[in-house]
Length: 93
Length: 416
Image (cartoon, rainbow over all chains, first blue to last red; front, top):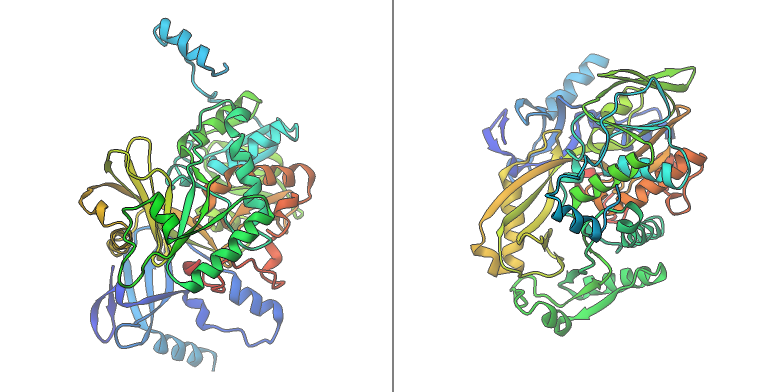
């Protein structure tokens, strides 16, 4: 798989480390134990389009949010996780 | 129809005209006592033990494809009970005991072959860990032997003992472990369940779970509604998809695991060998092919096929361990969708929906568990209490902090 890095262009997925669902960016702030357990352990795990976190460990060490189809492995896009997170904060502010 | 040596002989004399299909192909009835979603190894084993041990025979197994098309027909066929943690080891040893009597209990040749598994170690720390694991195995009666380098040399003198990075220092041997014919296990359980009255319904995809007032009423399928007092879900990689129909999120990610087989070779490897420094495990099938595998690809996938980097990684592991397979040509590779749980251990439990039961989270170790998983799931479905060997496999163990993390890597499914 080739990941279209927003800054570096197409990079081999082998340069990246996979973390999982991009919702992991949204760490719960409620302080509730149940919310944290849900955050740590439960996943949507969709068959189809999945937004997920990849870390460019052997590259520029940036975190990306990659949109990928889990049924076909087709990569539909990639953004810097930083931008995704900032945009989200902008929405909630 | 009972299988026996005499029967084979008699059929040989009469032109093999008397063999019948191994199971019926019934249309679904309007309702059952228990509907099992998923006609893989675990679902079929569950149906068999429900009928055989717990006397529940109004049972249907629903399979969306053909029987044995999922992971039961895609694994590397290894059976073993060499786990460490108290929540796991008694369960896998129970499974091993069921394997040892499987062919008699289902009257089917599943080619169970206790040829032994050797887990190699390459450092002092790894040896100490295997000593501890071996002692745990002794406590459950699984049996284990810790071999030094000379002991391993005696078994497999052609291994790459003097690898510069990962010299082989010895190994942990479980002699009772081995392999079984994976398709044979599915067919054998299917036939045995069918003979006891279970309806096995193929090409019947569950499209919805009918839940009223917090209680399961049945399943919507591609062949119409089927009522059920209890529904057991044993769908491996599709767990999240099926359970989402009940509005439940699962502690599971689906990942692809690849497996490989070489061209047929002369007998070369009589047991199962695992590399302790990389991830590589190999055995030789009765047809002569080297059957081997390694790590999952590491990203969420429902594709039943993987990518080339993992092929390279697995083959490098094999070459580091046994350079003499370097000339063997790869015949086939394939992928299966694994239900990777958050702690690497399975779930056999009730769910928040009354009458809906879950059997999932087998990661890529589900094949060896097939008999015990079926037995324990049948026990749960029949009695509403967990089987004594499966008490730790609770769905709420994550929230409660009672995870069974054999590898100790935390809530990171692609590392288990």
